[in-house]
Length: 250
Ligand SMILES: NC(=O)c1ccc[n+]([C@@H]2O[C@H](COP(=O)([O-])OP(=O)(O)OC[C@H]3O[C@@H](n4cnc5c(N)ncnc54)[C@H](O)[C@@H]3O)[C@@H](O)[C@H]2O)c1
Image (tube, rainbow, N blue to C red; front, top):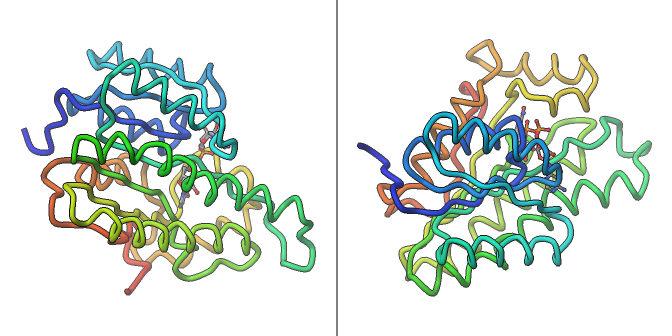
């Protein structure tokens, strides 16, 4: 099998639905035991049940990515249970409230940055020691096209995702001498519940900018994440892969 993950352990954050759910199903199908992490334990447990029904291995872990103690507890739980941590997919994220910058309050800004960017920092910091110990790891950070181009009315979101891309490149260089690869993935509009946080006009604007002329699917994102999570991805690090229907031209 290509991109075989048999025997490996993966942590996927924000895995209770949407892209995180799709990634968890895909990695489990390739043989990984998946720690389905989400602040909503019930939805994480529902994803675990789906994976188990399909013959895969998974377990639910409660994790609030913006809380360093919660992140450390969750990663410790995974390490104690599995004795290894091969794959970290930092996927948890929020869109924030769509509004021009002069209508954004402090809370709008801080919450989006805390979850989308600081959360990735906390998770990487907690998980890297397990990878360094075994000289193996794959980190995939879910950014967004907004982080490359900047979406109007989404300043905090766009800034947070640009930060995720830069964090991925920095961490890739810090780990380049090991068999550890760190990459980012930048989707455009993917039909998931996150779009409910935005106005229909905002979603239409973003969709109109996709040359392929349609929104993407969770499975299309999961396929790219799968490669970047696998041992086959051994000489690709510090990159940002777009899943954008041709929107990004660089
Ligand atoms: N859907 C899109 O169009 C799109 C496009 C580009 C990038 N992305 C990115 O992909 C990722 C997943 O998006 P999605 O569309 O699946 O979103 P979603 O809203 O459908 O799912 C997000 C999941 O993350 C969890 N979550 C939210 N905040 C959390 C926190 N603080 N700690 C732990 N878990 C938390 C939620 O409970 C939920 O299960 C996000 O980082 C998002 O920015 C999505």
